[in-house]
Amino acid sequence: MDRVNKKQNKPIPTIPRPSQGAMTAARTAAASSEPQSRSRATVMTPNAALAARSSAGGQGAGPSGAPAGAANKGGRGSNTLKGIERLREAREQRRSEMEASRLEKKALMDKDPGNPNWEFRYLIEQERKILQLSPIRTFERGYMRNEQIIVCVRKRPINERELANKETDVLSVPSADRLILHQPRAKVDTTKYIENYSFQFDFAFDEEVPNELIYKYTCVPLIHSAFQGGNATCFAYGQTGSGKTFIMTGGGRPGAVKMKGIFALAAYDIFGLLPSKEIAEHGLSVSCSYFEIYGVKVYDLMSSKKPELKMVEDSNQAVQLLGLTETPVHSVDDVLNLIAFGDNNRMMGQTAVNAISSRSHAVFQIKLIKADGTTVHGMCSFIDLAGNERGIDNAAADRSTRLESADINKSLLALKECIRGLVRQTPHLPFRDSKLTQILRDSFVGSKKNRTCMIAMLSPGHQSCEHTLNTLRYAEAVKGLGAKRDALEKRTSSVTKGKRN
Image 1 (cartoon, one colour):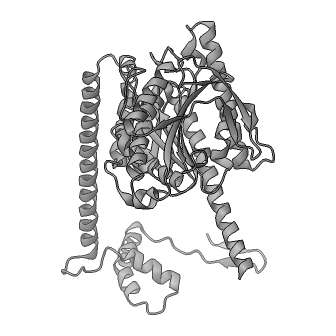
Image 2 (cartoon, helix red, strand yellow):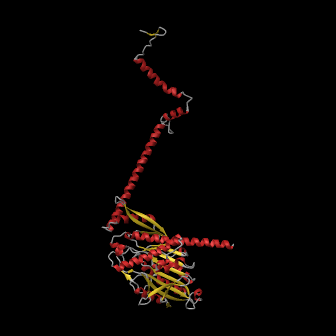
Protein backbone atom coordinates (compact mmCIF):
# COMPACT_ATOMS: atom_id res chain seq x y z
CA MET A 1 0.00 0.00 0.00
CA ASP A 2 1.28 3.45 -0.92
CA ARG A 3 2.31 5.79 1.88
CA VAL A 4 0.44 9.17 2.11
CA ASN A 5 2.02 12.65 2.10
CA LYS A 6 0.36 14.26 5.11
CA LYS A 7 0.84 17.87 3.89
CA GLN A 8 -0.50 17.31 0.38
CA ASN A 9 -2.61 14.25 1.06
CA LYS A 10 -1.00 12.57 -1.94
CA PRO A 11 0.28 9.04 -2.00
CA ILE A 12 4.09 8.56 -2.21
CA PRO A 13 5.04 6.19 -5.00
CA THR A 14 6.87 3.07 -3.95
CA ILE A 15 10.14 2.31 -5.83
CA PRO A 16 10.40 -1.37 -6.52
CA ARG A 17 13.51 -3.09 -4.98
CA PRO A 18 15.76 -4.68 -7.62
CA SER A 19 16.31 -8.35 -7.53
CA GLN A 20 19.58 -9.96 -6.37
CA GLY A 21 20.56 -10.96 -9.89
CA ALA A 22 20.04 -7.43 -11.20
CA MET A 23 22.34 -5.99 -8.49
CA THR A 24 25.11 -8.46 -9.31
CA ALA A 25 24.90 -7.62 -13.03
CA ALA A 26 25.11 -3.89 -12.27
CA ARG A 27 28.26 -4.30 -10.15
CA THR A 28 29.94 -6.36 -12.86
CA ALA A 29 29.21 -3.72 -15.50
CA ALA A 30 30.57 -0.92 -13.27
CA ALA A 31 33.79 -2.80 -12.59
CA SER A 32 34.37 -3.44 -16.29
CA SER A 33 33.81 0.20 -17.26
CA GLU A 34 36.00 1.80 -14.47
CA PRO A 35 39.43 1.57 -16.18
CA GLN A 36 38.02 3.11 -19.34
CA SER A 37 36.66 6.10 -17.40
CA ARG A 38 40.10 6.70 -15.76
CA SER A 39 41.97 6.52 -19.03
CA ARG A 40 39.69 9.06 -20.58
CA ALA A 41 40.24 11.73 -17.90
CA THR A 42 42.14 14.72 -19.35
CA VAL A 43 41.88 17.38 -16.62
CA MET A 44 43.23 16.49 -13.19
CA THR A 45 44.27 18.48 -10.12
CA PRO A 46 47.98 18.27 -9.08
CA ASN A 47 47.19 16.11 -6.06
CA ALA A 48 45.04 13.84 -8.14
CA ALA A 49 47.77 13.55 -10.77
CA LEU A 50 50.34 12.68 -8.13
CA ALA A 51 48.01 10.08 -6.66
CA ALA A 52 47.41 8.66 -10.11
CA ARG A 53 51.13 8.38 -10.85
CA SER A 54 51.83 6.69 -7.55
CA SER A 55 48.95 4.24 -7.97
CA ALA A 56 50.07 3.40 -11.51
CA GLY A 57 53.74 3.06 -10.49
CA GLY A 58 53.87 -0.70 -10.89
CA GLN A 59 51.71 -0.98 -14.07
CA GLY A 60 53.81 0.79 -16.75
CA ALA A 61 56.35 -0.81 -19.01
CA GLY A 62 60.04 -0.88 -18.08
CA PRO A 63 62.91 -0.15 -20.46
CA SER A 64 63.17 -3.79 -21.48
CA GLY A 65 59.54 -4.08 -22.26
CA ALA A 66 58.73 -5.75 -18.94
CA PRO A 67 56.32 -4.09 -16.57
CA ALA A 68 57.95 -1.35 -14.45
CA GLY A 69 56.73 -2.97 -11.24
CA ALA A 70 58.60 -6.13 -12.09
CA ALA A 71 61.82 -4.13 -12.73
CA ASN A 72 61.54 -2.30 -9.41
CA LYS A 73 60.93 -5.54 -7.59
CA GLY A 74 64.01 -6.99 -9.23
CA GLY A 75 66.13 -3.91 -8.22
CA ARG A 76 64.93 -4.08 -4.65
CA GLY A 77 65.80 -7.72 -4.51
CA SER A 78 69.30 -7.07 -5.85
CA ASN A 79 69.92 -4.29 -3.29
CA THR A 80 68.73 -6.56 -0.51
CA LEU A 81 71.17 -9.26 -1.58
CA LYS A 82 74.01 -6.74 -1.72
CA GLY A 83 73.13 -5.48 1.75
CA ILE A 84 73.12 -9.01 3.10
CA GLU A 85 76.51 -9.63 1.48
CA ARG A 86 77.95 -6.45 3.04
CA LEU A 87 76.67 -7.46 6.47
CA ARG A 88 78.22 -10.89 6.03
CA GLU A 89 81.60 -9.41 5.05
CA ALA A 90 81.53 -6.97 7.99
CA ARG A 91 80.69 -9.83 10.34
CA GLU A 92 83.56 -11.91 8.99
CA GLN A 93 85.95 -8.97 9.36
CA ARG A 94 84.88 -8.42 12.96
CA ARG A 95 85.38 -12.07 13.70
CA SER A 96 88.82 -11.97 12.11
CA GLU A 97 89.81 -8.89 14.12
CA MET A 98 88.50 -10.41 17.33
CA GLU A 99 90.47 -13.58 16.68
CA ALA A 100 93.65 -11.61 15.95
CA SER A 101 93.10 -9.61 19.14
CA ARG A 102 92.55 -12.80 21.11
CA LEU A 103 95.75 -14.34 19.77
CA GLU A 104 97.70 -11.15 20.49
CA LYS A 105 96.41 -11.04 24.06
CA LYS A 106 97.25 -14.72 24.50
CA ALA A 107 100.78 -14.09 23.21
CA LEU A 108 101.20 -11.29 25.76
CA MET A 109 99.96 -13.52 28.57
CA ASP A 110 102.25 -16.37 27.46
CA LYS A 111 105.19 -13.98 27.16
CA ASP A 112 104.83 -12.81 30.75
CA PRO A 113 102.61 -15.29 32.62
CA GLY A 114 101.25 -14.12 35.92
CA ASN A 115 101.57 -10.42 35.06
CA PRO A 116 98.48 -8.66 36.43
CA ASN A 117 99.13 -5.66 34.19
CA TRP A 118 99.05 -7.44 30.83
CA GLU A 119 95.83 -5.65 29.83
CA PHE A 120 97.49 -2.25 30.24
CA ARG A 121 100.47 -3.47 28.25
CA TYR A 122 98.16 -4.62 25.47
CA LEU A 123 96.30 -1.27 25.36
CA ILE A 124 99.57 0.68 25.27
CA GLU A 125 100.98 -1.48 22.47
CA GLN A 126 97.82 -0.82 20.45
CA GLU A 127 98.35 2.92 20.94
CA ARG A 128 101.97 2.66 19.79
CA LYS A 129 100.89 0.94 16.58
CA ILE A 130 98.74 3.98 15.78
CA LEU A 131 101.51 6.46 16.71
CA GLN A 132 104.06 5.10 14.19
CA LEU A 133 107.09 5.92 16.36
CA SER A 134 110.04 7.73 14.73
CA PRO A 135 112.31 8.98 17.57
CA ILE A 136 115.75 10.60 17.29
CA ARG A 137 118.47 8.18 16.20
CA THR A 138 121.14 10.36 14.56
CA PHE A 139 122.45 13.89 14.88
CA GLU A 140 120.91 16.42 12.48
CA ARG A 141 122.21 19.96 12.69
CA GLY A 142 118.88 21.36 11.51
CA TYR A 143 117.36 20.36 14.87
CA MET A 144 119.76 22.57 16.85
CA ARG A 145 118.20 25.22 19.11
CA ASN A 146 119.58 28.62 20.08
CA GLU A 147 116.97 29.76 22.61
CA GLN A 148 117.99 31.07 26.02
CA ILE A 149 116.15 28.22 27.73
CA ILE A 150 116.08 24.74 26.21
CA VAL A 151 113.96 21.98 27.74
CA CYS A 152 114.28 18.33 26.81
CA VAL A 153 113.04 15.05 28.29
CA ARG A 154 114.86 11.75 28.47
CA LYS A 155 113.19 8.39 29.12
CA ARG A 156 115.49 5.91 30.79
CA PRO A 157 115.34 2.15 30.07
CA ILE A 158 113.11 0.06 32.30
CA ASN A 159 115.31 -1.47 35.00
CA GLU A 160 115.54 -4.85 36.71
CA ARG A 161 113.57 -3.75 39.76
CA GLU A 162 110.66 -2.61 37.58
CA LEU A 163 110.77 -5.82 35.55
CA ALA A 164 110.72 -7.88 38.75
CA ASN A 165 107.65 -5.94 39.90
CA LYS A 166 105.88 -6.66 36.58
CA GLU A 167 105.68 -2.95 35.77
CA THR A 168 104.50 -1.71 32.38
CA ASP A 169 106.35 0.87 30.28
CA VAL A 170 103.98 3.85 30.05
CA LEU A 171 106.12 6.28 28.01
CA SER A 172 106.21 6.61 24.21
CA VAL A 173 108.40 8.96 22.16
CA PRO A 174 106.72 9.23 18.74
CA SER A 175 108.95 12.01 17.35
CA ALA A 176 111.99 14.21 18.02
CA ASP A 177 110.08 16.68 20.19
CA ARG A 178 107.02 14.83 21.50
CA LEU A 179 106.40 12.45 24.37
CA ILE A 180 103.20 10.67 25.42
CA LEU A 181 102.40 9.25 28.85
CA HIS A 182 99.84 6.43 28.91
CA GLN A 183 98.36 6.49 32.40
CA PRO A 184 96.64 3.23 33.46
CA ARG A 185 93.09 3.70 34.73
CA ALA A 186 90.21 1.52 35.90
CA LYS A 187 86.48 2.21 35.84
CA VAL A 188 84.05 1.46 38.66
CA ASP A 189 83.19 -1.86 37.02
CA THR A 190 86.97 -2.69 36.98
CA THR A 191 87.21 -2.20 33.21
CA LYS A 192 90.78 -1.17 32.44
CA TYR A 193 91.69 1.67 30.09
CA ILE A 194 94.49 4.20 29.55
CA GLU A 195 94.47 7.97 29.57
CA ASN A 196 96.99 9.61 27.21
CA TYR A 197 98.87 12.83 28.01
CA SER A 198 100.83 14.44 25.17
CA PHE A 199 103.72 16.87 25.78
CA GLN A 200 105.93 18.81 23.39
CA PHE A 201 109.44 20.05 24.21
CA ASP A 202 112.54 21.16 22.34
CA PHE A 203 113.78 17.56 22.30
CA ALA A 204 112.44 14.19 23.42
CA PHE A 205 114.84 11.25 23.78
CA ASP A 206 113.85 7.64 24.29
CA GLU A 207 115.81 4.96 26.14
CA GLU A 208 117.95 4.03 23.11
CA VAL A 209 119.54 7.47 22.65
CA PRO A 210 123.11 7.53 24.07
CA ASN A 211 124.49 10.33 26.26
CA GLU A 212 126.76 11.54 23.45
CA LEU A 213 123.81 12.27 21.16
CA ILE A 214 121.87 14.01 23.95
CA TYR A 215 124.92 16.14 24.67
CA LYS A 216 125.22 17.25 21.04
CA TYR A 217 121.63 18.44 20.91
CA THR A 218 121.49 20.12 24.31
CA CYS A 219 124.91 21.23 25.54
CA VAL A 220 126.96 22.15 22.47
CA PRO A 221 125.15 25.54 22.21
CA LEU A 222 125.94 26.12 25.91
CA ILE A 223 129.67 25.63 25.36
CA HIS A 224 129.67 28.14 22.50
CA SER A 225 127.79 30.68 24.63
CA ALA A 226 130.45 30.37 27.36
CA PHE A 227 133.19 31.12 24.82
CA GLN A 228 131.16 34.19 23.79
CA GLY A 229 131.26 35.52 27.36
CA GLY A 230 128.06 34.08 28.81
CA ASN A 231 127.15 31.80 31.70
CA ALA A 232 125.78 28.43 30.63
CA THR A 233 123.83 26.10 32.92
CA CYS A 234 122.64 22.54 32.38
CA PHE A 235 120.71 20.75 35.11
CA ALA A 236 119.05 17.34 35.32
CA TYR A 237 115.75 17.11 37.18
CA GLY A 238 113.63 14.09 38.07
CA GLN A 239 112.57 11.66 40.74
CA THR A 240 114.97 9.37 42.57
CA GLY A 241 116.24 6.62 40.29
CA SER A 242 115.31 8.32 37.01
CA GLY A 243 118.89 8.42 35.68
CA LYS A 244 120.07 11.97 36.48
CA THR A 245 123.51 11.00 37.79
CA PHE A 246 124.02 8.62 34.88
CA ILE A 247 123.49 11.31 32.26
CA MET A 248 125.51 13.98 34.11
CA THR A 249 128.49 11.96 35.35
CA GLY A 250 128.27 8.78 33.27
CA GLY A 251 127.12 6.46 36.06
CA GLY A 252 129.23 3.69 37.51
CA ARG A 253 130.67 3.44 40.99
CA PRO A 254 131.74 6.62 42.81
CA GLY A 255 135.40 7.48 42.34
CA ALA A 256 135.78 5.79 38.95
CA VAL A 257 136.90 7.80 35.92
CA LYS A 258 133.87 8.28 33.69
CA MET A 259 134.01 9.39 30.06
CA LYS A 260 130.37 9.22 28.89
CA GLY A 261 128.65 11.79 31.09
CA ILE A 262 127.90 15.42 30.23
CA PHE A 263 130.62 16.60 32.65
CA ALA A 264 133.31 14.75 30.69
CA LEU A 265 131.85 15.44 27.23
CA ALA A 266 131.91 19.17 27.97
CA ALA A 267 135.59 18.92 28.88
CA TYR A 268 136.34 17.24 25.54
CA ASP A 269 134.54 20.04 23.69
CA ILE A 270 136.19 22.88 25.60
CA PHE A 271 139.73 21.59 25.13
CA GLY A 272 138.89 20.85 21.50
CA LEU A 273 137.89 24.50 20.91
CA LEU A 274 140.73 26.21 22.81
CA PRO A 275 143.36 25.77 20.03
CA SER A 276 141.09 27.24 17.34
CA LYS A 277 142.30 30.52 15.82
CA GLU A 278 139.34 32.64 16.98
CA ILE A 279 139.69 31.51 20.60
CA ALA A 280 143.46 31.06 20.93
CA GLU A 281 144.05 34.80 20.41
CA HIS A 282 142.18 35.52 23.67
CA GLY A 283 144.70 33.51 25.69
CA LEU A 284 142.04 31.73 27.73
CA SER A 285 142.83 29.18 30.41
CA VAL A 286 140.55 26.69 32.19
CA SER A 287 139.83 26.02 35.85
CA CYS A 288 137.31 23.72 37.55
CA SER A 289 135.43 23.58 40.83
CA TYR A 290 133.11 20.96 42.30
CA PHE A 291 130.79 21.41 45.29
CA GLU A 292 127.59 20.00 46.73
CA ILE A 293 124.53 21.42 48.47
CA TYR A 294 123.59 19.06 51.29
CA GLY A 295 120.59 20.21 53.29
CA VAL A 296 121.13 23.90 53.91
CA LYS A 297 124.93 23.75 53.73
CA VAL A 298 127.47 23.89 50.89
CA TYR A 299 130.59 21.68 50.88
CA ASP A 300 133.71 21.69 48.71
CA LEU A 301 134.16 18.34 46.94
CA MET A 302 137.68 19.17 45.79
CA SER A 303 139.01 18.75 49.33
CA SER A 304 139.09 15.43 51.15
CA LYS A 305 138.09 17.26 54.36
CA LYS A 306 134.98 18.69 52.65
CA PRO A 307 135.01 22.08 54.37
CA GLU A 308 131.75 23.99 54.61
CA LEU A 309 131.60 27.00 52.29
CA LYS A 310 130.04 30.37 53.03
CA MET A 311 127.75 31.80 50.38
CA VAL A 312 127.73 35.58 49.85
CA GLU A 313 126.63 38.05 47.19
CA ASP A 314 128.98 40.60 45.62
CA SER A 315 128.10 44.15 44.59
CA ASN A 316 126.55 42.84 41.36
CA GLN A 317 124.33 40.39 43.31
CA ALA A 318 126.33 37.48 41.92
CA VAL A 319 126.71 34.52 44.28
CA GLN A 320 130.22 33.83 45.54
CA LEU A 321 131.40 30.84 47.59
CA LEU A 322 134.17 31.83 49.98
CA GLY A 323 136.94 29.24 50.20
CA LEU A 324 135.89 27.25 47.12
CA THR A 325 138.79 25.40 45.51
CA GLU A 326 139.51 26.53 41.95
CA THR A 327 141.77 23.99 40.27
CA PRO A 328 143.58 24.91 37.01
CA VAL A 329 143.34 22.12 34.42
CA HIS A 330 145.34 21.63 31.24
CA SER A 331 143.80 18.55 29.64
CA VAL A 332 140.71 16.41 29.52
CA ASP A 333 142.38 13.84 31.78
CA ASP A 334 142.84 16.49 34.46
CA VAL A 335 139.11 17.20 34.35
CA LEU A 336 138.15 13.51 34.48
CA ASN A 337 140.37 12.93 37.52
CA LEU A 338 138.80 15.90 39.31
CA ILE A 339 135.31 14.58 38.60
CA ALA A 340 136.25 11.14 39.95
CA PHE A 341 137.76 12.69 43.09
CA GLY A 342 134.69 14.84 43.74
CA ASP A 343 132.25 11.97 43.12
CA ASN A 344 134.06 9.93 45.74
CA ASN A 345 133.43 12.68 48.32
CA ARG A 346 129.80 13.19 47.48
CA MET A 347 127.02 12.22 49.91
CA MET A 348 125.37 9.01 48.74
CA GLY A 349 122.68 6.80 50.25
CA GLN A 350 120.18 4.06 49.56
CA THR A 351 116.44 4.29 48.99
CA ALA A 352 113.70 1.84 48.09
CA VAL A 353 114.02 2.73 44.40
CA ASN A 354 117.77 3.29 44.08
CA ALA A 355 120.64 1.33 45.63
CA ILE A 356 123.07 4.25 45.14
CA SER A 357 121.12 7.47 45.52
CA SER A 358 122.57 10.98 45.49
CA ARG A 359 121.65 12.75 48.72
CA SER A 360 122.84 16.19 47.61
CA HIS A 361 122.76 18.60 44.68
CA ALA A 362 126.17 18.48 42.94
CA VAL A 363 127.47 21.45 40.92
CA PHE A 364 130.48 21.07 38.59
CA GLN A 365 131.77 24.34 37.12
CA ILE A 366 134.22 24.93 34.27
CA LYS A 367 135.48 28.51 34.05
CA LEU A 368 137.23 30.19 31.13
CA ILE A 369 139.79 32.61 32.58
CA LYS A 370 141.19 35.57 30.65
CA ALA A 371 144.90 36.17 30.14
CA ASP A 372 145.18 38.26 33.34
CA GLY A 373 144.54 35.07 35.32
CA THR A 374 141.65 36.39 37.43
CA THR A 375 138.84 37.68 35.20
CA VAL A 376 136.22 35.12 34.23
CA HIS A 377 135.42 35.25 30.51
CA GLY A 378 132.65 32.63 30.58
CA MET A 379 131.46 29.72 32.69
CA CYS A 380 129.62 26.41 32.35
CA SER A 381 127.73 24.99 35.34
CA PHE A 382 126.51 21.38 35.24
CA ILE A 383 124.14 20.43 38.06
CA ASP A 384 123.09 16.94 39.09
CA LEU A 385 120.06 17.60 41.29
CA ALA A 386 119.08 15.18 44.01
CA GLY A 387 115.93 13.26 43.24
CA ASN A 388 112.47 14.35 44.25
CA GLU A 389 111.25 11.65 46.66
CA ARG A 390 107.93 10.30 47.87
CA GLY A 391 107.29 9.19 51.43
CA ILE A 392 106.93 5.59 50.27
CA ASP A 393 110.48 5.69 48.85
CA ASN A 394 111.86 6.05 52.38
CA ALA A 395 109.21 4.25 54.40
CA ALA A 396 111.78 1.79 55.80
CA ALA A 397 114.66 4.29 56.04
CA ASP A 398 116.12 5.74 59.22
CA ARG A 399 115.39 9.21 60.57
CA SER A 400 118.44 10.89 58.99
CA THR A 401 117.48 9.64 55.51
CA ARG A 402 113.95 10.95 55.93
CA LEU A 403 115.32 14.34 57.01
CA GLU A 404 117.56 14.34 53.92
CA SER A 405 114.52 13.71 51.76
CA ALA A 406 112.66 16.57 53.41
CA ASP A 407 115.55 18.98 52.73
CA ILE A 408 115.84 17.81 49.12
CA ASN A 409 112.13 18.25 48.48
CA LYS A 410 112.15 21.67 50.16
CA SER A 411 114.93 22.99 47.91
CA LEU A 412 113.28 21.57 44.78
CA LEU A 413 109.99 23.12 45.84
CA ALA A 414 111.74 26.49 46.17
CA LEU A 415 113.08 26.09 42.63
CA LYS A 416 109.60 25.23 41.40
CA GLU A 417 108.13 28.31 43.09
CA CYS A 418 110.76 30.54 41.49
CA ILE A 419 109.98 29.17 38.04
CA ARG A 420 106.24 29.51 38.67
CA GLY A 421 106.78 33.13 39.73
CA LEU A 422 108.82 33.84 36.59
CA VAL A 423 106.08 32.39 34.40
CA ARG A 424 103.40 34.43 36.16
CA GLN A 425 105.69 37.50 36.30
CA THR A 426 105.13 38.02 40.03
CA PRO A 427 107.00 41.00 41.56
CA HIS A 428 108.77 38.93 44.25
CA LEU A 429 110.73 35.80 43.36
CA PRO A 430 111.83 33.59 46.30
CA PHE A 431 115.38 32.88 45.10
CA ARG A 432 116.70 33.37 48.65
CA ASP A 433 114.58 30.53 50.02
CA SER A 434 117.29 27.95 49.37
CA LYS A 435 120.96 27.69 48.47
CA LEU A 436 120.04 25.91 45.24
CA THR A 437 117.85 28.74 43.93
CA GLN A 438 120.47 31.33 44.86
CA ILE A 439 123.03 29.53 42.71
CA LEU A 440 120.57 29.01 39.83
CA ARG A 441 119.20 32.57 39.86
CA ASP A 442 121.50 33.89 37.13
CA SER A 443 120.51 30.96 34.92
CA PHE A 444 116.95 32.32 34.69
CA VAL A 445 117.20 36.10 35.16
CA GLY A 446 120.77 36.92 34.14
CA SER A 447 122.32 38.37 30.99
CA LYS A 448 120.95 37.75 27.51
CA LYS A 449 124.21 35.92 26.79
CA ASN A 450 123.31 33.27 29.34
CA ARG A 451 121.94 29.93 28.22
CA THR A 452 120.09 27.29 30.26
CA CYS A 453 119.21 23.70 29.47
CA MET A 454 116.90 21.54 31.57
CA ILE A 455 116.97 17.77 31.10
CA ALA A 456 113.89 16.19 32.66
CA MET A 457 114.64 12.56 33.49
CA LEU A 458 111.70 10.14 33.40
CA SER A 459 111.11 6.70 34.90
CA PRO A 460 109.04 4.52 32.52
CA GLY A 461 107.37 2.20 35.05
CA HIS A 462 103.64 2.62 35.65
CA GLN A 463 104.11 2.75 39.44
CA SER A 464 106.04 6.01 38.94
CA CYS A 465 103.32 7.43 36.71
CA GLU A 466 102.22 10.24 39.05
CA HIS A 467 105.83 11.30 39.69
CA THR A 468 106.58 11.22 35.97
CA LEU A 469 103.50 13.30 35.20
CA ASN A 470 104.58 15.91 37.78
CA THR A 471 108.06 16.04 36.24
CA LEU A 472 106.57 16.57 32.77
CA ARG A 473 104.35 19.39 34.00
CA TYR A 474 107.31 20.98 35.76
CA ALA A 475 109.36 20.80 32.56
CA GLU A 476 106.41 22.23 30.63
CA ALA A 477 106.38 25.23 32.99
CA VAL A 478 110.09 25.84 32.36
CA LYS A 479 109.46 25.58 28.63
CA GLY A 480 106.69 28.15 28.96
CA LEU A 481 109.14 30.45 30.76
CA GLY A 482 111.54 30.19 27.83
CA ALA A 483 108.77 31.00 25.35
CA LYS A 484 107.79 34.09 27.35
CA ARG A 485 111.38 35.32 27.47
CA ASP A 486 111.78 34.87 23.72
CA ALA A 487 108.52 36.72 23.05
CA LEU A 488 109.53 39.53 25.43
CA GLU A 489 112.90 39.93 23.72
CA LYS A 490 111.25 40.11 20.29
CA ARG A 491 108.83 42.80 21.49
CA THR A 492 111.66 44.76 23.13
CA SER A 493 113.76 44.50 19.98
CA SER A 494 110.93 45.74 17.76
CA VAL A 495 110.24 48.71 20.08
CA THR A 496 113.92 49.65 20.11
CA LYS A 497 114.11 49.53 16.33
CA GLY A 498 111.01 51.67 16.06
CA LYS A 499 112.52 54.33 18.33
CA ARG A 500 115.73 54.37 16.33
CA ASN A 501 113.82 54.80 13.11
